[in-house]
Image (cartoon, rainbow, N blue to C red):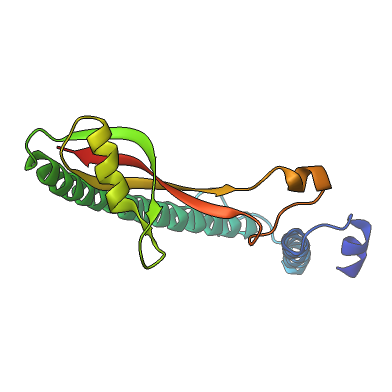
Length: 182
């Protein structure tokens, strides 16, 4: 067996194992053929049923493996379909809840624009106030925050100096990008 693997190019361990197993099977088959006594065939009237040989055993082994793989794939497919159904139901529940919340607001509209969140007295950005300001600039009385975006504002001097700025060199600004206005 080591002679066979020395002749083969270097491949993965799985390829070597399969080739080694095939070599062992061929050697056992040849030994079984040599050990059988040569007997004259029985008369045509009394033929025993054919005995399963090496090829039949390997064929059954492949069939068993294929049927096991097929049943495993079917099980996985059923689980994925069940997961998909659960995800659809959850999505319906969530969108129903969100739609119900928006529908309860009379004359509500989703507005997309950009309004900077100004710092509150405690130093944190006040994005709810920015959402109200955004809605008032569009002619509405009140607004609720839906989405924000963050940007870093850096001066051009870093580019002129040929270096990249670090986090303390740039100011971070937060903007309201969408709000529900009424």
